[in-house]
Figure (tube, rainbow, N blue to C red):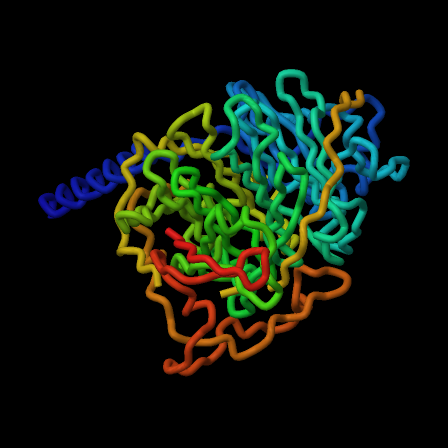
Length: 513
């Protein structure tokens, strides 16, 4: 009996040592975290007014990493979001840091009606990016309460801030010809691959329109804008319902995940409501609108194990970075070598990763923002838990675990060029942690099955949700194995085909790598 007890104690100690080893060697670092978000309110702010400040409705969806500060985006998903862009110190913020409204309180519009859309205001920013000239590009969707009554407060725009002075150095307004009735601009890429060193005004910007699915392209040097669309940018009703640790929610988001491989010149994208990742080359996006009768040369990169909202590219080896929601993980796939890895798994800290960024000022660092979005959405938030986090992984030193190989397996309306007429220079107005592989594969072989249905129509009141909250959802449709899907049969990587240029009838070969 004593011998058996000693053996049991020894085994328990071994298990504890193993768990401690896993915890100590996890590559996932918590930079800061919040239970509920608060701001550096001015004196006499109406913080008891729910339309001005409702902490249960404020979550972070985007971040940008500066030299000494971290900038965060808190969009107006619900009422009571006081300000949409803020910052915190990069070092020493601790837990629950107070958000400092950026660039100052004159840009905030919560509870206000005394402003014009031509004013320097920020309505609702989902994501931001910092260029090589240390300027912050804030993409303002202009939509208030997008998950409630979806008010189109102002047209979308981009404000470019010089982070040395926190002043607006450029404003980009989008012409109405590239907008649709419920356009929601949620993500952006700044493509500087062919810009002249030190000038950051000859770039291309690629923008996701999530509700009216498309990618909007802005040529900064020519100051013109166009949009391109493809069925792959639309939500798939089979994947309208997402699940995180038993919480299920329905969200029919179109293209929202958007990232760019600068070395390969390839943009990757994904809707939230899909299990697929797609790609398109820089040359295709830059070549302007194509004929209405033609399709964009989009490629199916592969399939994931569950939905995801964000994508990134590793600066180390060009691997595609992503976060499958149901697996609460950060994973990568190298499109050149086919190597697939789990960088981190954490059921508490990685529940809903909304944004990834690899700042050029920290080569090899991957920052991400996670939240319990599903709890905000379902209105079952626990105020005593941490509900927003900023996390970091060192891509040069992490020891990810391997998964099974990633197996890789056409597009709608396009328009003419439109001038934005918007270059303006004006000053601003004043737990469980594991480094083991997640159960199941992140990717699978493409299924040869079609869409036997039309896309869900969007509600005129809330274009995100296709179903009433109490409606049952059949998450998977029954398809015949012999049937073939349009998206599953997109050309794989390396396929050469012909596409039309903006001169209708003119053809040229285009190789998508």
